[in-house]
Length: 253
Length: 231
Image 1 (cartoon, chains in turn orange, red):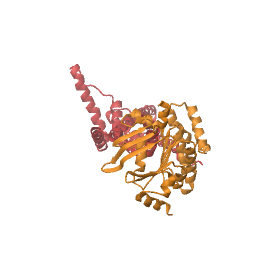
Image 2: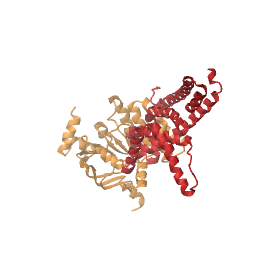
Image 3: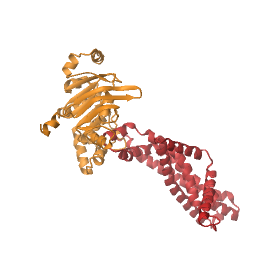
Image 4: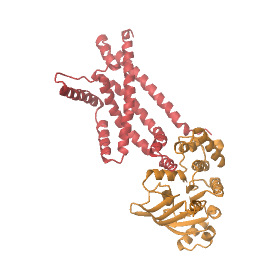
């Protein structure tokens, strides 16, 4: 086989028998997961089920204790160069936005481009404005994060991740800290990204988003992947008892 | 005010020395404070213990005592070192400017250690994670994220440390530094007017501390521009 098909058939994210402990508490149990280019994965599950820990292991904000995590061919070990290389390719959007409070919106989008990608300032600003337009708030460029609404801040956070031109974006409950009326503006941006072919791994309880966008929905409980299926299958015919209970709880009202 | 005639220039040069001590000790105080905070936050038990002893000792002893011990201690130490090379030497004099400057920097630096430590701990961990997730290195995160967020938290108590420093400069007169209080003492021996002479010193210090307070307020305003709603 030639190398072309190799890169297309090789998963971007590959987790093999990953275990993670916080002291005596096992947060992840034998996680096996493969995510291919362009796939959209939604991970759901009760709180404390390990879903956030799982995606935080993908860019090594958490260190796994054993098993292998291979991102686009690079295995995550203690090697700092490898960790940095992976982080350049993996964007992340956090529940609490985590914009840099002392920088303007534009600077928030430029700083990593300048420091990590070594993009010249003018070009970095150009790219920043491009993605601010994409999330529909270019007029906020010279304001500070505190001056924006939660929904706007989260859209800026998505734009900041996009500025690094990542292969994969991880979303860690991106709408959980938002007022209800702001959830849709963020989901719209995420749906737009999904249509564009971005590889996405989203921890979220937005089941409407999961149903319309996800290629696969994963249900986690007590550190394990309990069930994974295409959305139609997952929501209409869940196999596992724990999945059924969870879906009943979140969909019943 | 006629008694003051002829003393103005002495007071002026005394004030210049106060300013010089202040600037030198401010830089050293920041350095000691950052090293102390770094040691306290490091993973090294030894560094933590040393920094802990540092803050306990210098926050728990009178400042004037530290100045005297450092002045005479360093003179004795330097003398005995010099005598190893040349037994003829009787006494090595340590300049009071540097002995005093270093002493007050060490003292106020021990307070700054606690301030900086608290401020570093007050930086939003989410900002640090975001920087790491964007691929920024530990050093880049420190310079561009940690320090800019930290100094805004540290500024109000740090302003108090600067006021302590400026007032502590007066203590250095005891080891013979010819700053304003030292000038006043000389003037009193000549004129016999202690109240007038000390009032002048008070006015000079009040002038210095007002400038510091205004500067801190201006810097705070600059730092807080990011949190003032300008919608």
